[in-house]
Length: 288
Image 1: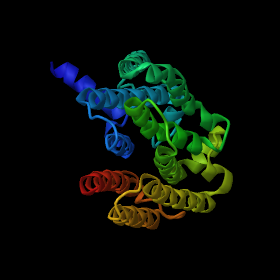
Image 2: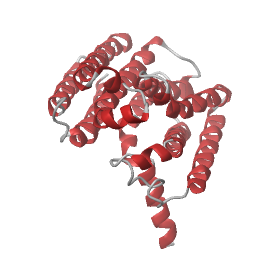
Image 3: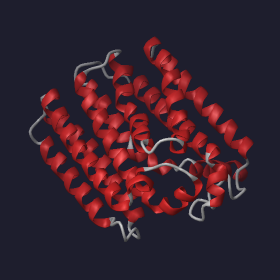
């Protein structure tokens, strides 16, 4: 039993399970907004959560497999589970396969539309891992991949898509892409030596961070458009303002010549941003 527990912890570390908190609140927000007009079903909640966690697990596991040789050369990432030898590639492959199956089966249980869409979505999630090998827009690909989460949750409940929920997807997409640019500034020299692509490699840290600021401005703008589109309670704007302040603090913590606070900005600030959004949607729904 102890061995199984330890293995679960290792898999959790490999896929950075704690980082699920970045996108999960956006998917939960989409569900809550959908339930304002559609019937709440506990089965939908459970299946959507299963699909979300399984899809992210498959994508992150595949990313670790695809990048294992690269990670082994990078001092910052050499301690990761596969390059350090804590986890074998075969074990990681099995984990990705099982996670993919859980995702597809969860989508099947949610309905035909979700089942059909699960295959191209999964393919895109896995494809992201190769993008830094050929395009500086890899951050945008990551943003789009994760930004699909709210749309998936919305479709699962409503069996349709709407412009309103697209605004939430764009908010998540730009939010993720923006802080991925900040995070990748840590590896500029290594990425250059390996012939890898990113905005920091292409433009340098200062210009890349400016692009991240622009993307986060689009995050706030998209949330405001979502407010108008859903005719949300005016109180929600306070939460949007709080998210804007948190994004400003995030950018104040990370400087082109000073990245020592990158982990605080990456995990703590982004966790607060996602939780603030979800709290705002919950309170807005109660007051409506």
